[in-house]
Length: 87
Image (cartoon, rainbow, N blue to C red; front, side):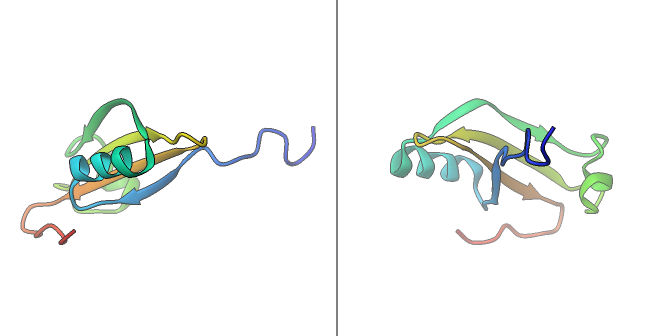
């Protein structure tokens, strides 16, 4: 098997301050389609270990299919005592 066999980009990710607004923007401007449901992970799901963040941090994310091909993951982080970033 060649070194590049099976290689490729599965998806790209972008952190957004408001997941729903980010999804709407990608749908309206780029014609993206949400793939599945918005997912949520938090305390007890291993988010702190996987990403090295506060154990109380929560993550919400959605995958979008782009019309020209490819996938984009939009991610919204929240943590107690941390104000959301402005859009």
